[in-house]
Length: 99
Image (tube, rainbow, N blue to C red; front, side, top):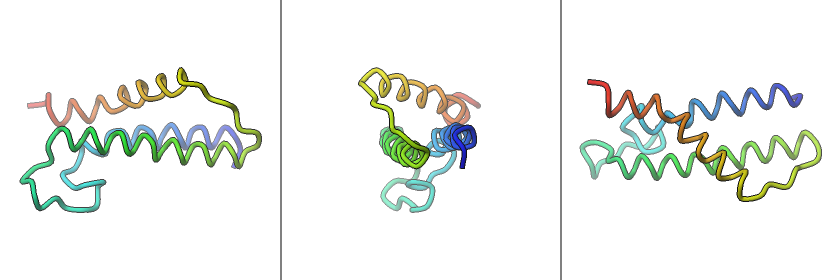
């Protein structure tokens, strides 16, 4: 897979995964929650954080397969976390603001 295709794959996966906690009532989109009648907001945030790190690990592996891996500092992770939250905005609007 070339660098351009892997970049687009990461972007499309980020859009999908960022909205996934807000679009269903299951834990990580596969395990039903029996303890809650609906998924609480804090649980959606926990899923969002876990999905962020999982997608980061996947992107790290794709970057390692493509060639040399670049060093990242805290600024990179702060920007990507904020971008991931912005990508989750449509799902948040659909779940909580649309009436």
